[in-house]
Image (cartoon, rainbow, N blue to C red; front, side):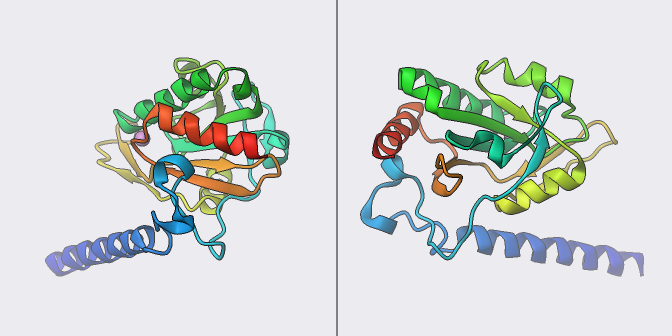
Length: 211
Ligand code: NI
């Protein structure tokens, strides 16, 4: 009986994973040829029918509550991850920091934002310590479980606890994309994990110049 339950649980986990993979790999969601431009200069194409981004209420590293309205007038460059991430998050945040440096003064028009998917460990002080390792301009946002859930849903972020050995030692699985939102808050571009800093900077330069 226990075996049956265990296999049923595995089957369910597998079904959920396949469902997520299908959603994220949908050709219309990640159509690199969309708009006839390469991913390196314009980001991954997302059809107009798919909404990305939206309202959020979170807490910054000074403990102040902020919303998406707090960043109006700036290009929001949004990345979701967590401070205990062993590899991907640090790499992507370094890419963002390097791209901002490459932008020069135009970087003032960009609000780089790191939103945690692990609010349990990424408290305000923990996040404050972490973001400044990459760039003093990087805004770290955390919040309650409910606030984080709402923000991740708006941005279609997948995340889940993995490898939980005990309550304090665990990894988080999470989707890894860099989102670009316009000064009006609308979704403008999605960049795949592993984009080179200079490619990201070039894409930002083009977008900012066109605004
Ligand atoms: Ni990560």
